[in-house]
Length: 243
Figure 1 (cartoon, rainbow, N blue to C red):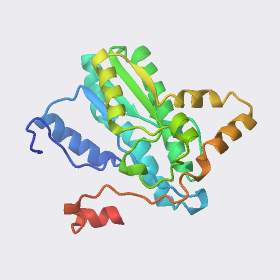
Figure 2: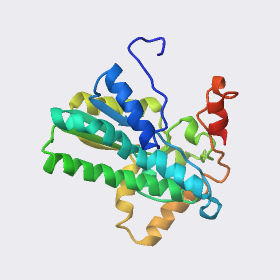
Figure 3: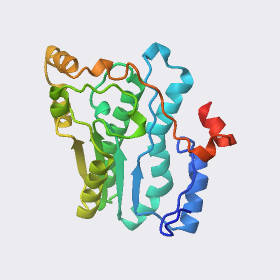
């Protein structure tokens, strides 16, 4: 429990179905059935494809992709029963395009983008629950620890056309969708809209965009950041995460 009595958190490995199932039962028992799900957990390895270990790929898909299935499997049935709720999926611009050192991450986010779209149609047409709203976000670079070690070009062209996002900007977009009680697909910042069209352009235009944005070198000096709090460093949990 946090200092705010209205907020309760539960520690859970969202990539592990059995753990999700156990924690979900505890959440339902202690707090009740959630009406809003925000699938936000993410991890990035930042390695070239031949440097990826099997466990790296397993972790990436476990956290970035499979976790969405497990959370939905745990909480969606009650939403369908009530014909009400809102599911928010945090995807990425990297689910729309690819770049060097992002093979596993891009693949995991592309899977989430298409999973979310399929979910929308299942809710509308197979579960007869169109009032369960779905929002997917495909943001560019967000100023969070996850990508804090990437090399962002400081030239005026990049800052204008490919700006980084503050977490608050992303949160506001989510809140607006929730308040409107609408299903939305959100691309932030504006340049992400062009990423959707890139697949329709000749390859030389796609290659030019890759070069102008230095996309294949942003991760060159990347170092993985783990979400370990100071009080976890010497604990068994901290050691497990570091491994």
